[in-house]
Image (cartoon, rainbow, N blue to C red; front, side):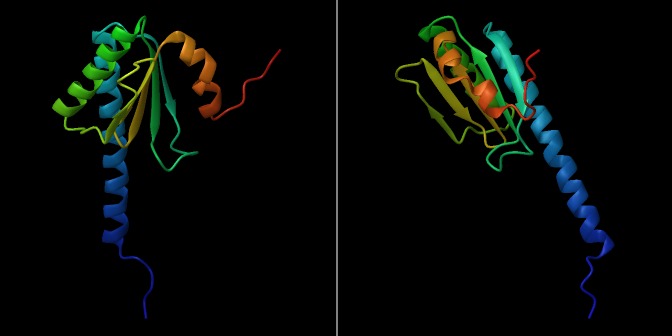
Length: 133
């Protein structure tokens, strides 16, 4: 009995992985452009694919007011939909100090600077420790 995968099975797995990586890169580009369109501040993209099975990347950006945070989140969700990345969920719209947009492969956090500093997601999700000199 042969238990080794056929060459076609490994090729299809490689193609699926390559396609997934392309989807992540395409989605990151859409998110980044949507944030820039509405003038987001301090945009940061973190690759969390090696430490999370929830998402491949996290994007964190700041807005200058609750109204700005809401506009940023709305634009990300809208542009993602247009590009074929349907948001799984959006949380925090009522207070708009921190809005999370879950796109499945990418989770986007749009925050006021005070909330961003307090929760410090950058340190929480950083894959390599920072060295203090």
